[in-house]
Image 1 (tube, one colour):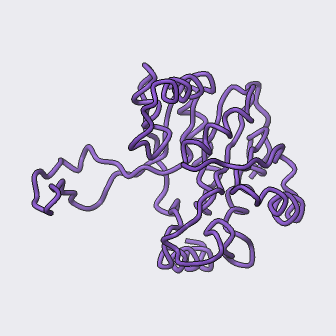
Image 2 (image 1 turned 180 degrees about the vertical axis):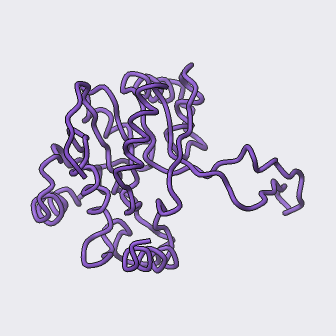
Length: 237
């Protein structure tokens, strides 16, 4: 990817603070190896080679020095300006990343366990956020989806034409998402928040738009996901 500067400052926040309990591994999933490199390196590399001006790496508490030496320094990620500890929940980690990113114009929030971020996806993100101010990557669902009650009884079948599976990056005008997070914490209404788009949906008047992600843009959560990622990486699908 070419390194193209923009007039506005574009900052990436890469989240690598999760414990990855569903991976059933003592090694946090973001540090598991894929083709000889830790998973988190792939998102960092994509941002390093893109128009992004600066990267904030948010890692687990106590892992900062490891990330500085074995990730940032070892692999030459010169755009990583800060390595900071995340919080208890994902939204805590994002907020810490936002505080570290200030001041900037646009912020790209990316899961460190999504290794197949590419230039085309980032350019779609850039175009969408510059037009809308708040957006997220996603793909239309392929399967029929059911909503069920606590007993597993089907209560509705939503029209899948209007259903998308959400990915990252989730991208925002910095003032919009920072204000939304501040309002969320001030209101004490964090329960059930699973991504940044939800924060904007609930605490910002700006509508969140979706742009096309990629079928390759998978999140590594379970051992089977890692097997799929190895096949994708080996065969360049």
